[in-house]
View (cartoon, rainbow over the protein chains, first blue to last red):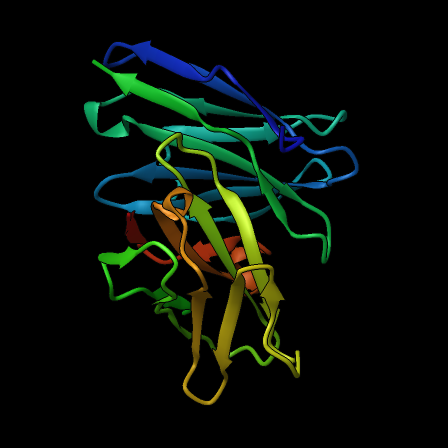
Length: 111
Length: 116
């Protein structure tokens, strides 16, 4: 157990639907990062939150949004899903100089 | 813009041999960090080793060492005495600049296959 918890582990949904992925960071870590891993795009950084505030944006689509709550857990919302959104979504957390710890990922399949 | 390049899509090695996985990077920041992660077929991302840009010595962690050549902007991972369990995808990553917050920017990865 890495200390970063992601739920659910697997998700199958239809095109056009909306899903929410959840991440609980390692205890004490203030930063949460979301990544998308697909076969053709590799590991793409989506968005970072630090202590409840958005810190940086990567290649995140407008159909995707995220937030970090006061207890530091984070949610990634994916809407109007397309077949191409099928991927492994990772959450990672960090605190300065302690390194980055990844959750086990949520495998999303859009059918 | 910061970039990580891994030019070897796949590498093959026999058990007990050493293998080097290549990684080059590009950044204009004087302070940066370089990381290697292992992703086995089960999918999890496992941290292997870290090298800071100001570190004087190459990082080592057990059978893993990082051959850091700052002038060449390379940070190759060396795995000594390969084991069957080392078969996995390996990613080189760099801590991003301010525009990317402190997110890791990843290369496309190298698949390592270890045979007996």
